[in-house]
Length: 382
Image 1 (cartoon, rainbow, N blue to C red):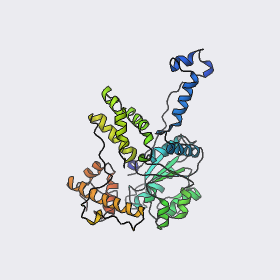
Image 2 (cartoon, rainbow, N blue to C red):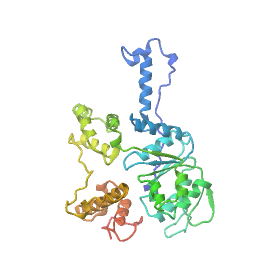
Image 3 (tube, rainbow, N blue to C red):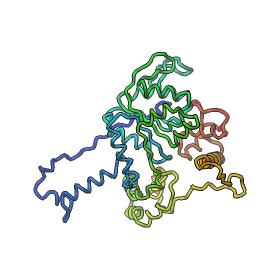
């Protein structure tokens, strides 16, 4: 289970020409950058290009430039960082970029999705366990905080961390030590923590679902990643970045996806799935040579006469929106299970999510009678 939920990201060395500018032959600057442009112009263009990216993230909008500025400064320290943003806004890519820009870049970068497993498994995944600590614990095992020694731990969906595990994570941040399941001994750890959430932890604190002391420990540096609909100016840059990573394509396809008409059509879509949705859409366009506008899932179809279509303006916006999202999630899961004849693994693959996480969604919406575990098979939901 641990191998499936953790990923070690290794630094990739890229050869760079480090010939000093002063050693270039006279006139080489003009020869390198083309006729009519000075070497200084070329350097200015490269500097502008560097400002439009941070690690594998790209963006020239004011919103992203502000994000890059904060992340760039924070990467030089060991400060704990909390990334907030909707699904698909690039929280894990941001965390990886921070790690690569830090002094810990040559050490492990380990990722744990706190929403992908039940609390019992998550405790072992984070803090490790001793042999015999529970049924099936046939050998002692390090948790991610020990395994990432000297490096960075990225906890995605930190808002899903159970209230029982929150004090244990707080101790890691305050005392820099962990206690494996099944022992009373503490082990010192040396890691940098980055956490991410697609919900407001402040609201979670106000609702007594998240500890305030843990929140303040996590939010030493708090960064909100803007949704794609708020950074339309970045679409041309993002499209270019994505299609360059899709591999070779025919000339006609390349012209279409770079055309003003195509980019203009993209700007009219609200991209609820953000950059992940954009990448999947572009990959489909290139694979099928089908450039139809992306379908909109912004407003889930409901019967106009059903109670779900009524808008309760007496609710705060956030509560009303969460209610609609929850309603859509449940109907989506029900329809997906119907289409795939209740085969959970097939439905999870179609939804593009981990099977354990899919089980968790079923349990959350009452479509399953018990909480998920690592022993769940591919059977129909119970």
